[in-house]
Structure formats: C-alpha cells, structure tokens
Amino acid sequence: MINTHDRLCPICSSDEKKILEQIRFTLFDGHPMNGGYALVQCGKCGFIYANTNVTQGQLDIYYTELSKYEDKVVSTGSGYSQNDRDRLFAVAKFLDQNIANKSARILDLGCANGGLLKELKNLGFENVVGVDPSHACVVMAREEVGCEVLQYSLFDIPDNIGKFDVVILSHVLEHVFDIDKAMAIVRHLLVDGGVAYIECPDAQHYYKVIHAPLQEFNSEHINHFSVNSFRNLVLSKGFEEIQIGEKVFKIASDQDYHAVYALSRKGAEVNNFAFEFDTSISKAIGNYIFESKRMFAEIADLLKEIPQDTTIALYGMGQFSFKLLSTYELAHRTKLKFFDNNKINVGNTIGRIAVQHGDELLQEYEKEKFTIVVSSLIHEMPIRNSIEARFKEKNHFPDIVGFSRVLRRTDH
Image 1 (cartoon, rainbow, N blue to C red):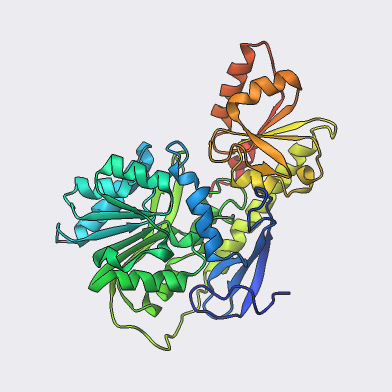
Image 2 (cartoon, one colour; image 1 turned 180 degrees about the horizontal axis):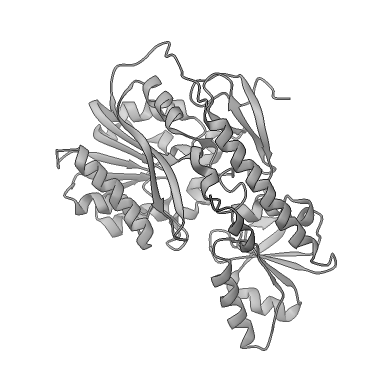
C-alpha cells in the first residue's frame, strides 16, 4: 500500500500511482535509501519514478561527499575515455549548431570534471561556467578547463551568479528528487528567451542493451524519462520546444547507451497544462524488468553452487553489487568480504564489513582462502584476467565466479 505522504509525481505532481516493481538493494551503512524503494508509474501522465522518501538534502550530501564522479577512471562527464569524449563532443557540436552567438554565457549544472565545458571552449565558446557539488570535481574542472567553476548544489546556487543565455543539465535530472524546483531554478538562471539543454537516459530503450539486471533502477537514478515525458516536462514548466528526440552513444564498455534530449526556449509560465499520458513506456519497462528477472534467476543458480561455508569476496562495490547483496543467495551469507578500486568506496561499511582496496585482495587471500565474485558483467573478463595473472605469480589459483555469460542472451 502506498501512503499519500509518499513521493508525488515529479512531473505533474499527481499522487495517483501504481507499483511496477519493488527494487531492493543493500547500500553502505547509513545511506538514506538503504533497502530500496517501489518503482511506480504515475496514473495521470504515465511518468515512471522511484517512490522514495529520501530528501533532496540527503541526495545533495551524497553527491557532495560520496560521489563517484570525481574518479577519473569510473566517472562519466569528464572526457577521459575516448567514448566519453566523443559523447561530450557530440553534445557540444549540437549546441554549436543551435547557438549562433559565440559570446553566449553558458552554464553547465553538474559539470563533473568539466569534459563538456572543455569541448565547448574548443568550439569557441569562451564564456562558460560550471557548477558541481563535489569539491574534487570543481578543482579538477578548473585545472583541466581553465574556466570559472563553482561548488554548489543545484539547489543552493546564489543569485549573484547572474543570468545565462544557455543552461545545460546533462545526465542530472535522473538523479534529482525535486524536479519541479530544479526546473524553476533553470528558468530563474536563464535570461528571457534563453535556451535550456537537458539530456537523460532513455527509459524507452532500457531493454535494448542491459548492462546488468535492473541496473537502471538504482540508488542514483530515481527518474526515468522518455521523449513523451520530456515533452510533458518542458512544456508544462514554461519552455517552448525547439527539438526533443532520442540519441545513441557508446559508453566505456563499447556498448550502446540510449538517451533522450530536449532543447527548449524559456517562454511564458504555464497554468493548467494538459498532460499527455505516456502510453508506450509501460510495455518497454515491462520488457526490461522481465529480461532482468530472467538474468537474476541465472545468476542465483551460479551463486547457489558456492558452498555455504565458503567465504565470498565481492569484487567491485557498485550498483549491481548492492542488488546482489539483497538477493537470498547473498543476504543469508555470514562470511563476506568486500573489495573495490574506487577510493571513494574504500573504508565504507556494509553490515559493519569494511570495503577494502582491490590492491589488498591477494594479501587477504593469503590469510584466508575465499571465492572471488566479480560483480561487473560487462568488464568481467579483463578483471578476471588481471586477478588470475596477479595471483599466479604467487602460485595461487582462486575460484572466480562471474556472470557475463547471462548477457549473451540479451541481444535485441
């Protein structure tokens, strides 16, 4: 039963909703979203979102103190990998084709390490400004791009930052609890007739490329957009559509990633907007959930083969690991170890078990033999090969379990 005090639809503010799936995960101790949430669909406009009572302030703390986006290896939005650089260049080129004035003042909200700012500067836009809640990201963006970069949450930007001709929200709104307030802030930051560019993952196509089962429904992505919901969003918030559409780009694993984007102009505020129900998203999300559950069933069978008295070392503490820890096969295990190469995660605890750095894997194995479970599906083989090579030098041959084989049946 959903209570009336639960989250309203982030787009139309309706409290009418139906549950599509219970999303369960075990996060770091103290995380406000620990346990999971109900994935729901709005009964008025059809938007799909996480029905969580986490506050915007709690999310701001996460992105300020625990964000993965400051890590050059695992982050996106920095342009350190070729695919990420290509993606950012494509966005900058699109904006270049639609913004004639090279002196336009451009603000990138949630700029991470400044990859998009750099591409815009390379195309001749000198008047660019970045904002990000992470201190480390701000420092790196200033050094890498050489432009003004400020440390603020989207929701605490001061008025003295001024007005902008263009405001960018690239892969930000899927993380935001209060979308209505976010869009009001974008309007406030724009000059009259200014342009907003918004881009997010495309929920309409989640099922086409599954990177891990239910990967898109996690503790970070709490809003799931389609072209239809983007149109509802921008038009209802007083923006005039310039172009709304879908795009595909390559991620670090060389897989396709589908996104939806909107280029819109600030217009007059709208009252009593007639929302158009998104009739196509339910089937697409249903296909994604169905295929994900099939994959989880295969993964459960692989985990069952590990004897109950064996210690399991989970390698890679990302969103899929958090879901694995909520499955019956791991939730009832008492002998667990956690390893991760991202320094942001090292030292955090899950069930009072501290995450150790991946460099300590061999040393810990020599103290106590364990089975290594590689949680990354798309990067399993290079991770496995690296572990085996390192261990072989010490004449160790550990049992390693991975799940990449289940991806072979998800090609659509």
